[in-house]
Image 1 (cartoon, rainbow, N blue to C red):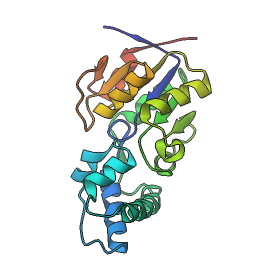
Image 2: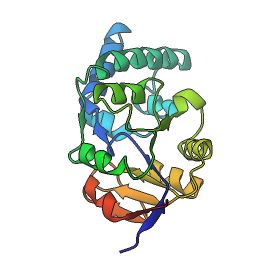
Image 3: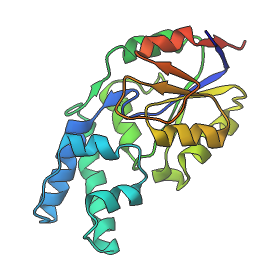
Image 4: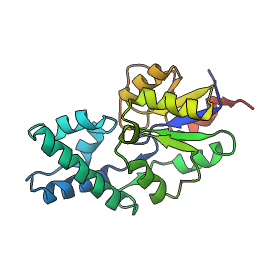
Length: 214
């Protein structure tokens, strides 16, 4: 079995660490109700677009809205997501994730890089009491950068020389390739990928794939 040297582990969020589909659908529906859009969204729809950056996501879900209305809708969704997800409602850690993080944290710095709106990762950390588990996080809601660029940014910020990226979707693979780090596919998640350097059928499998630099 191939093992990967790591002095930093970077995680995707949706489908890799948690499932927030119910809460996100609730937020989109609340935003749609507040804007009187006359439509409803399902958790399955949310799973199908998780990982997309903001504009492609809006073009998929509300293609009929003008750019101005799309932006207003996005801002309202952000408010609603923060209201809902910070409480822990509508989300759950994927099975085995908390145990994995507890095992990894003493051995290697942990980071999150996700394509999400501002406040989303913060809601995850607050809802599941994980703020002290991760050294840093980044997302395009704050930087405006792609996933690959944000992976590079976090690694440069913390001097990570041997990072690995764990994610479940094609956009995660593409980000890892851009950043030139190994891509470890969370096969237990929501997405499919065209290639990977190693696959995890459960979060705990990650422990068997890594060696840690001193």
